[in-house]
Image (cartoon, rainbow, N blue to C red; front, side, top):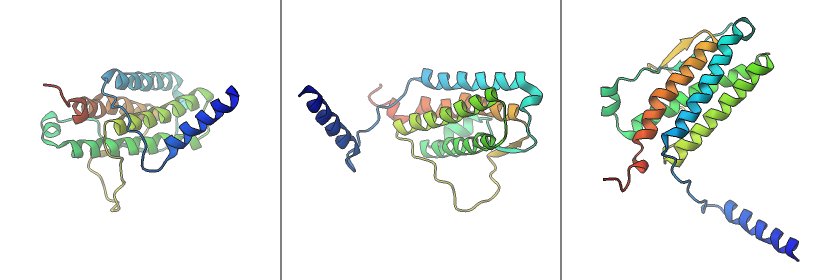
Length: 183
């Protein structure tokens, strides 16, 4: 009887989670140590790629977000503008890193590519928990002044690190949901 009632309880939980329109909100993830963990993972990937040199080279250019932050300009932006800049940068980084999956890379490189893609998915989940809207690609495809080109995998992963250390960390640190009720 216990087995049947356990199955019944499990089914009730699943039905509750999948009921349309009633999903439970994520708890905000405001702890910057979470972002620091993602930065460390990106450092590990970049270090492995630096060590691999010729075996990890690829002859292509990658479009990546600019990582420099003008703090006066950043502070003048509202949270929606900051979120849009971070989300679009994450989108572009994901596209660039995902493009490496099609190339025939070493097992070590492939594991770092996979880990980096998972890292980006987790960062998106953190941003979602902070009520930061998902990125919606613009319909007009023009030259974006917030993007640049890099020509090596090592540079790509260096941009990944710097983007996390800069704009992502700033956005998480200033998320309004993390400062509610704080005087």
